[in-house]
Image (cartoon, rainbow, N blue to C red; front, side, top):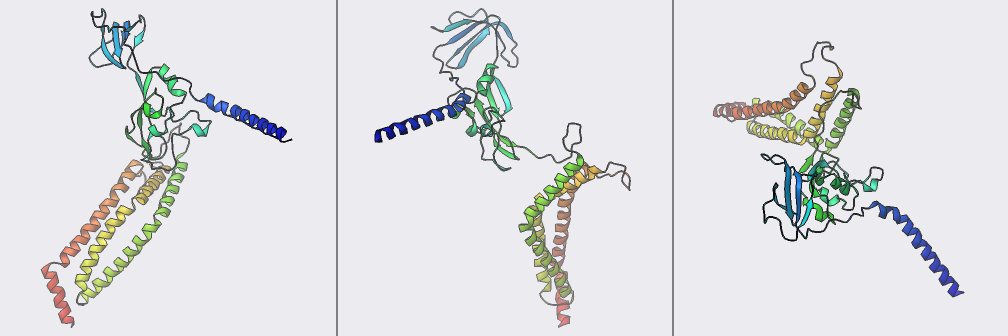
Amino acid sequence: MRLHRIHAVRAGVSALACAAAFACAPLAHAQSTEIPGPPQRTAIVLRHVDVRTCTRGHGPIPDGYLVFDKGRIVAVGAEPMPAGLEPEEAQVIEAKGMVVTPGLWAGDSTIGLIETEQVVATDDRSEFGDDRPEIRAASAANPDSDLPPVARNAGILMAHVFPDGGVVAGHASAMRLDGWTAADRVANADAGLILRWPMMETVNARWMDKAAREQAKKAAERYVTAVDAARPRAFPLGAATFVLGAAVVALVVRAFAGQSGARSALVQVLSVQAGLAILAFLLTKDIRDAQITFFTEISRLTPSGRGPGGPNPLEGASLSTFLRVAAPVWLALRSAFSGLLVFALTRPRAVASFEAAAVSER
C-alpha cells in the first residue's frame, strides 16, 4: 500500500512539472533566441563596395574598400586597394553592388523598455510619481527583448533610450543593441536628464482631444489641488502676516502718541514683515503657477472683441506674462516701501522727533 502511494505521489509531481513546463513555454518563447555576436577574431575586408562615410567634406565612394579589425574600422578608401594594406588571414568579401554606411542611431527611443503594450509586465517605460531623477533607462532595459535584433537588421546599432512619464522622467541612456546583458549594452548610463515641461497654454486645433473649456476645467482642478497641498505652509504664513500687520498699526499709533520704545519696535517689525513677504513669495510659487495657468485658460474662453469692454489686451500669452511679472514687481515695490520706512524711522531727525514727543508726553 505504501509503495502504491509513493508511485501515486511521483505521478502527481510529474504531472505538475509537465503543467508548469507548458505554462512557462509561452514566456520562454517570448524571449529573444538570437545569440549576441562574439568578439571579432579575424580582420574583415570589404572590396568594391559603395561606401557612404557620412562625414563632412567626404563624399560617397562608389567603388571602395573597407577594412575593420577588432570591432574598429582601420582603413577605408577608393579602389584599387593599396598593396600590403590587406591584413594576413583576413576574410575578404566581394561586396559589389552593396552599400555600407555607419551604424544608425535611434534617438528618443524606448526600445528595450517595452515589449508589447498589451502585456503590462513588459512595459518599463515609466514609474510611479512625477519627479524621478534617480531613474536610469539602462537599469530597466531588457537584454532579451526581440526588438533590438529587428532594429539591427535595419542598420540601427545604437539607441538613445528615454524613460517616459512625469515631469522629471529620469536619465536617458545610450545603449548598444547587441550584448548578453544590459551592462554589456550600456555605452553611457547617464546620457542626459529628461525633463518634460507641462504645457502652460491652451491649444485649440482639430487634432486636440480636449476643448478649451475642458482644459480650463483641468487648470481649475490643478489650482485647487495646489491650494490644498499648500495649506500646511500657507496658513502659518497668513497668520504671521496678519499678526505683523496688526502690530505695525498698533506701533504706529503708539509711536505718534509719544510712547517710548514704539519707534524702535516698529523698525524691527517692519524688517521682519519684509522678510516674511519674501519667504511667502518663495514658498507659494506652486500656487502662483497654478493660478496663472487657471486665469490664462479662463481668458481664452472669451474670444477677443466680444467682451463688454471690447478687445482684451491681456489675453492668452500676454495675460500669462503680465501675471508672472506682476507678482515679483509687487514684492519689489512692497520691499522698497518697507525699506524706505525703516530708513526714514532711523534717521537722526526722526529719532529726535520721536524722542521729543515721548518726553513731552511724560
